[in-house]
Image (cartoon, rainbow, N blue to C red; front, top):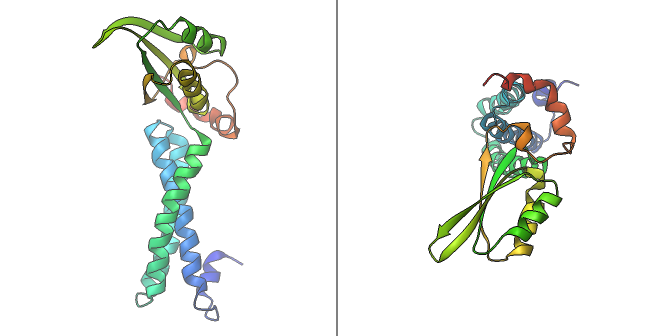
Length: 201
């Protein structure tokens, strides 16, 4: 049975429409949250496709609100679905770990051991000697995939629990500077055919 026909059935119990609105809002807001993150990473093709389904589902939900303006249950379901959809979308995006990030580390001691550990793990690192407020420091830069970020942080903390580091999103990076090896997860393999949208920037 088509979903629109299900919404329009007169014999439905009172709670069915609010539940469907709630679920629809979770779905469309989750898609929207991920879409915004993909837009920030310039994945235009996938973001556009997700935007199509996001608006389609949203129209389905809002149409039920407009047809039942006196039903307070629908309003609550709409708002609760929005809140839950935001949480679900952020959780999904965190699990997918899309994109790459720049890690900047500052340690107030010789960092030969840390550099060796990072290089042995397959990361390409750049380091410079600098002068901090209390003496010489070593500044280390490396670009990693988000899926590998926790591994890098653990390595840094094992070397120096008091090490100062910052993490920034990277819009684009040359492959020669990113952690070597095969990308993990299903999403990079699915998104591979769309990478031509980003060429020539």
